[in-house]
Structures are given as structure tokens and as C-alpha cells.
Picture 1 (cartoon, rainbow over the protein chains, first blue to last red):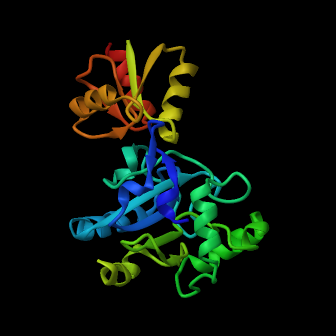
Picture 2: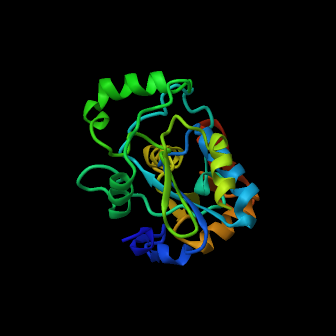
Length: 181
Length: 77
């Protein structure tokens, strides 16, 4: 069993086998489903621009299980949305990533790589933890996805190398990606 | 006919549509995520794939949920 055994749905409802990405370094990310102020999209795009020619592919999976604004950020000020959040890497169909209804890919990823806590040095860590304790205390139990922008790094052979929580910014994992390219 | 270029998970698009409905304005929804044709039209009108884009003639348009500008656009038709 590996990530290559999974099939996911594109935004237009077509099946896409992850086996099509064999030989690439993959960063699989559950993304926010709304188009508010989400700096991680911009940082992910920067990683993609830097490393896509060397074999990095980023796969985004929007999910609306984490309701409301990103904690610790301002309210939406812009009154419009960019298609695909302004990124050029693939964004798949919206779907669940945690609990019974989670897509099989995310059940697999979270079973293989456990939750090891947030990086409390990140400015969002404290408000995120507070928001979870207040609104979704059950999300803090177990190894399920805790919030938007959890990232799984997969090597060219399909092995899951690392899991990064939302409190690790895309820029901070550039070194981990470089090692695999 | 008023056209609103939009996609489903865009809250501002829904606000524009609800505003038009509240004003009793008939409009056509053009989903740029589901239709490549709609995306190409949107790109041609505004030069970008940022929505909501509201237009009547495909030339003059309003980007975003801006009630004042939408009112002006409707009044000019």
C-alpha cells in the first residue's frame, strides 16, 4: 500500500490516480476552501515556482471542515476571489479530510504520520490552539488533520517522509524538499 | 442580460448574486471553474480570473462585491 494506490477527484469531477505522480516529490496539502486572507497559498506557490522544474508537485485539497477565518489573521478585506486561489499547482475537488467522512487518501496519510504537536513558536499556534479548544475540542484528539494547511511530504518512491502542521510555514520546509530533489 | 462570472466557493460571488436577486434583476451565472468557455470569456473581459465579474455588454464590468458600482452599471444599461 502506498499513496500511488489512491485515486482522487479533480475539480471537474474526473478521477486522477496518484500513480500518475510516480517519480515526483509530492507535497500534499489540505487547503482552506474559501478565498480569504491565506498567506500559505502564496508561500506554497513560491515553493512550486522554485522547485517544480526539479520535480516537485504540490497537490491541494480544499476542505471546509475548519469553519471560519484562519485564526490570527485579519478579516477578509478584499471583495473578490481568484480562481484556484491564484496558484498554478493542482487544486482538487473539495472534500473532507478528517473523521469518518475523510477521503481515503487522508485517512491513510494521517494513519502513517501521527500528530506530534504544533510549533508553538509560530504566531498562529496559540490562537489556533485556543480556537480548537473552544470550538472543536475533539479535533485535538488523535492523529486526524487539525486545521487547514497540514502538509505531507512524499519522496520520489512514494514514501511519506514527513508531516508538517499548519504552524510550519511552507517557506520553512524548503530545506526538507531540497533534500529529496 | 446581466452575467455574473463566478465560482461556487467564492463568498463574494454569492453576495453579488443575492444582491441582484434582492433587486429583482435577472442574471446568468457563468461558472469559471466548471466551464472553460466561461473562464475564457472572463479572462477576455477583465484580463484575469478574479471574480465576481458582473457585466451586461461584456465590455464594461464590475469586479468584486461593490454595490455602488453594480448600481451604476445597471443604471447605465
